[in-house]
Image 1 (cartoon, rainbow, N blue to C red):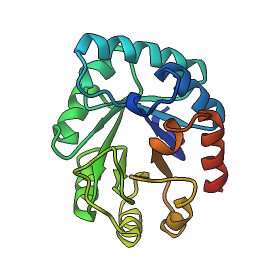
Image 2 (image 1 turned 90 degrees about the horizontal axis):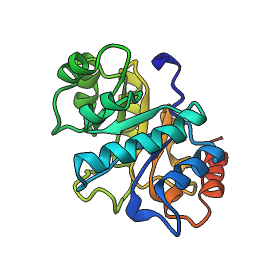
Image 3 (image 1 turned 135 degrees about the horizontal axis):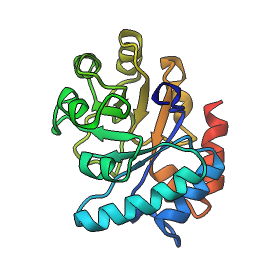
Image 4 (image 1 turned 30 degrees about the vertical axis):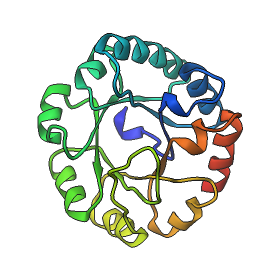
Length: 207
């Protein structure tokens, strides 16, 4: 299953971005527009609320056979039988996460350098997220990554590479030469009034 994951349009959730809708409707509309993978990111909420939200989001993603990744929380990922977990550089090492979550689940790692990406692959990550590619309001501490670094990472590891950070249908063309496996997007989908249409525009730009 995890070897057949389509990383091309990777939606990262952020409820604060939503315009006149809820997270469940937004995720569904985005999937209808072409989202191939969803990561649930929830900060500053209780474990119970995260669990309940994750369960409901998974009901939506399951309906369309789209994998759901949980950000940071391995316990939540396991409790709802999500497709996997995504971890940052300050979270536990991929090798430890792999031991907890098992070999059938996806482990993704955020990286911003070639060294971090090589280490992530060595530790057993299934893919890396690389960024931030462009200025972004959702992650203040993200360091800028050049397209040449992105390409260098893609050329030197064998697992999928997903670009992240400020990516829109207007600038995604700048990443074309890096030959990446997908783009992770928040605001260019969720901050739009018509989520489905926004996703379709991104899919079109990716072509």
